[in-house]
Image (cartoon, rainbow, N blue to C red; front, side, top):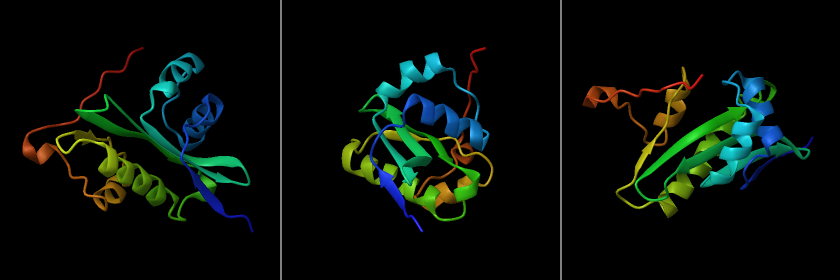
Amino acid sequence: MSEYVLVERTPSVTEYRELRRLVGLSAKSEEAAVAGLPHTRFAVVVERDGIAVGMGRVIGDGGTAFQITDIAVLPAHQGKGLGKRIVGALVDWLRANAPRTAYVSLIADGQAKDLYAQFGFAPTHPEGSIGMYLRIV
């Protein structure tokens, strides 16, 4: 049986778009992926037999603000601790590279909040903040 390998790299445009599609995240155009992925601060891809089955990225300005985004694990590979490995690698990188005063954020969909809480993430809403977004259509 082949093993999962966590590789420090940005997913390719094809991997990125396909992983997002297969896990039910919002679609991103090829144009958007081509423009955005090169600006990744840090990323990991989980591979099995050389095929991407999971990913996660850190984006941001490199000093004041960072965001963990694009956490995805294909459904057939979920429940094996891969999401935890991905988030752990991203948090380890942030702890080693982000300034102490940096603000690190993420959006937790559904029960993913329980995974992120294991790494010290807490809801902002009780402190008077709420996550918001603007969808460009």
